[in-house]
Structure formats: C-alpha cells, structure tokens
Image (cartoon, rainbow, N blue to C red):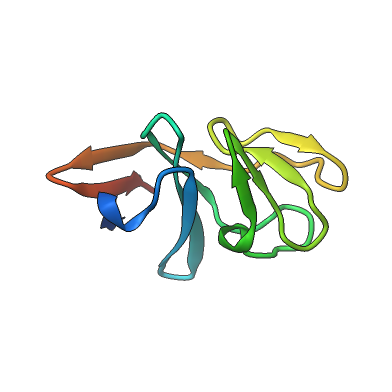
Length: 103
C-alpha cells in the first residue's frame, strides 16, 4: 500500500535541479522543473544503476552522468540509447513548503 513520505523542503531543490532522496533500501530522484513543479522517479538509471541526482537536468530531461542516457522525468520515458527501460514515476505533492512522494 502506497504512503506519502516527506522527501525534503521545497526550497531545498533549486529550480531546474534534482536531489537524491533515500527511503529504506530505495533511492529516488526529486525534481523541480523550470515551471516550478515537482516530480519524483526512481533514483537509479535503468541502464547501470547510477544515481541520476548526479546527472545533468535540462528542461524536462535528466541525463545519466555515466553513459548519457536520458529520461523525461515528468513521465519516466527513456529517450535514447543506452537506456531502453523507462523509470518508475511517483505522485508528488507540496504541502506547507514540504515535498511528499507517494511510495
């Protein structure tokens, strides 16, 4: 059963940036878009399990720092080689300046 978990304060993420959030034995990426909206995905690249929070984010794309695989973090879709498996995405809400992920 999914539950809402506090990931961070909304102002901890700069606009057009991503942070790593660990919960239990899982890692997530929490994103703040150029439009000031928040998103969450699994935090590891589906290609070689590298932390996406170390990657480059531009517009709605996160690029893996190891082999430059790209994902659309708004829907998790894989955008090009070497990644071919989509990222899992999670619902996000912001309440009282805090970002919560439904995991």
